Amino acid sequence: MNAVEIRVHGRVQGVGFRYYACREAARVGVTGWVRNEPDGTVLVHAEGSPDQLRQMEDFLRRGPSYARVDSVDIRRPPATGTFRSFNVEY
Image (tube, rainbow, N blue to C red; front, side, top):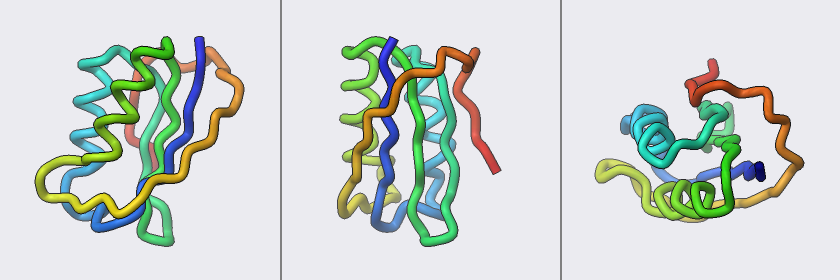
């Protein structure tokens, strides 16, 4: 089990980004969370296999069609193994 935290910059709030991130997480089978940040970014914490995380990272670099992803910042913290699903955090 690995983990990744990705901060997505661009037009990523108010365009369904969190909804589509949850949908993609379910599709690839990762657990964790997504949330809007006060600075206008979206922050994602995902846990899964290296291949699952790569697929999630690929999606986050593109975003849904209404979003515009300008850049991403990636951290690789240790996995906690405590998540059972992938959810929106508020």
